Amino acid sequence: MGVVAKRSSMTFFSDGADHYSHRVRIVLAEKGVAVDIVDCQDDELPEDVAALNPYNSLPTLLDRELVLFESNVMMEYLDERFPHPPLLPVYPVARAESRLYIYRIQRDWCRYADTIFNKKGSEEEIDAARKELRDSLVAISPIFQEKPYFMSEEFSLVDCVIAPILWRLPAMGIELPEAQCKPLIAYMDRLFDRESFQESLSEAEREIRE
Image (cartoon, rainbow, N blue to C red; front, top):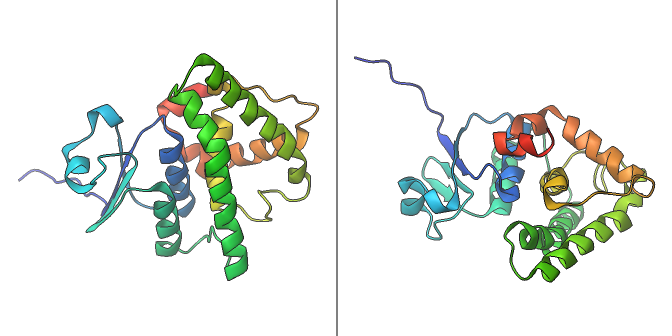
């Protein structure tokens, strides 16, 4: 009999270029989870995804009998399933604030990124999204003078959502003005230097900043 490779009980179907998949990979790396990561694209999904996910979409997380197909749900599940290190605050008010930050990032920055990457709309609309995202990042830069991470002393799920967007700035044609964005650029360096962040990167993502 041949030797059967031991598989982990968790499988993550991930698009190596997608920032929603990337945020979950950061959490998996931060927690040190044993996981099989299957790199795929929306137009060539494995049969497993089509059979398990009613939306036939990426990312999809499979943990034994559980199937998850929304990135924020995946991140919170992983934080509860693998409690160390914790990536959400302990207290209900602070947890609610963190969730609200994620919601706002999703509504604002992620929406602009999706317009740029998915080429939704005219060239003028894509250029407008690029300008709005850049201006928003410039405006928020000063808050990073106060704490090492986003409104926090500790790395959290909020940073996991922001990091993939910031890593992709060159791919979106966005250059931050160094003089105005020193605190934000220092924050980016802290994020990108984390061992878990480096482990989370796909080949396609590494190429963005090579």
